[in-house]
Every structure is written in structure tokens, then in C-alpha cells.
Image (cartoon, rainbow, N blue to C red):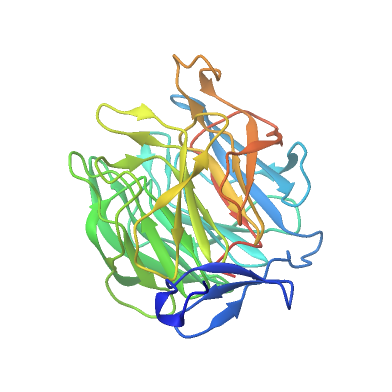
Length: 349
């Protein structure tokens, strides 16, 4: 028996056998979903920026992959900025990637730098965030980049900055998060940004959303898949319909997890189970195209029987349309964690 329109949940996805297209229900009609990667000077590209190989050992490595083609990452260039270490907020358009904030040489950073995703080479200066911080949650549309919250040791904050990606300049006040938070994750459609999970010990952090093109405070979205405990150090990626977040740390003092949760960005519902990471990690890099999501590197649990301790170089991927576990993609040029990542085909574009 077919469903009537009032029975169809907003955000439902179907395959239209007449048009051979994927469609999503937006509340009044079915809208076609773009499922092909744009042709962007070599295709959909993911760039993995800096990180660390051990506590206090920061690296300025940048490497990249072509998302549609499994294989090992290739050297992109080196970061020339002082914030080449942990938890840099990263936003990107189809042509340009920006990194903001971070922690290096025992000090917080407020620098924003940029690179051209289709080329290789070092960063150039963009401007500064409103305040120096690390572990900010970040997301972007085709034109605007958002840096939300973050850690000003030892406290989280709720400030949201925005920048216009195509220009240069300092971060501008956007509004505030519902709660102070750090080390959560961001994901986006072209219109809406989700800020998921994060650390506000010992409380569970409320998931929130913003309308990217406007200004204002974040609003409550819905609970995570496991709403009994906070998760942080996870990585969120998205296409224009679905956001997924994988890995991270749950509980206190915390254990590294492998589960992946899924969100329908257009709704305000609870996260659902998507699958598991093959390699259990936290603080990975992550990027997506309309059809494929990729997780790279990270830090594995030291006592794991199934994966090595410390930093890993493993790259794994999923189909964004199909709930499943990840599979092998290739390796990074250097194993590391607390990776920041950017791409030219994510859900906000």
C-alpha cells in the first residue's frame, strides 16, 4: 500500500524509477538530489591538513585524494602557518579551502589561512578569528564559512564567527551557540548547518543548527544516536541531504568508538545508526562528495586488538546513500591524528 503525502516523513529519500533519479521529500513535494560529482579541475578532491604524530609532535603535512578513486593520498605541500597542529577549524568552497585557529608551540592561534584546492602548494594569509581558540566546530556553504565555539583553555566558548570565503578578512560575529562546546563536528547542506556533539563535561551537549546565509543564534536540532553520553573528537561529513559522523570518544574518562551516526539535515530529528568504521579512531579527517564519504587517519586506542595504537594512516570510505560499514580506500602519506580536512564537493556547495 502506497503512502499518502501526510504519511511521508520530511527528509525521506527514494529512487524514482521513471526518472532514474534519487529524490528527497521536503514536506510538500519530492525534489531531485544531485548525485554526480562536479567536474572541478580533476574532480572532487579532499585535502588533509596537518595534525600530530604524538603528543607535542605537530606536523605541517598536507596531502590530498581524488574522492571518486580509491588509492593512496598524494603530497599537496606544507603548511607555512604557526597553527599546523591540533584541531584547526576548516571551511571550503568549490575553489578555496580555509583553516582557522588551532594550537601550536604551547599557544592558541587565531590565524586564518587559505589554499586553492585544485592546485598544490602552501597556504596564504586570509585574516584572523575574533579570538584565538582550538577545537572549533566548522562548516560552510559555497560562499560562507562558519567557525563555531571552540576551546580557550580550559573553557569552551559559544561564539560563532563567519567569513566570506572568496574574499580575505577577519572573522565577523554571527551569533552564539546554545552551549559552550569544543571538539564536536559540523556538517551542512547549501542552506543549513548542523553542529553535532562536542565536549561540555560532564553534560551532554545539545545538537544545534543554523541557517548559514543569515545571522543569529543556533537553535536546538535533536539528539544524537546515543544521547546517553556526550561524544567528542568525532568527524562529520555530508552531502546536500545527509550528514554522518564517525568515530570519536564517548563517556568519561572516555573510550574511542567506531560507530557512525546519520542525520537528515532538512529535519530536526534524532540521529540514527549508519554503520561502523573499520578502524576505530578519533580525531580523523573527513570529506565527502555527493556520493562518497571518506575518513582518513586518526588516533586508535592503545589497547585495541583490531587496530594499531597511536596515529594511523588508514583511509576508509562509505557510500553516502547506503547505510553500511566503511571499506578500505588507501593510506595517507603520513599517519597522524587531529587532522583538519577540506574538499570541493561537500554538501554545503
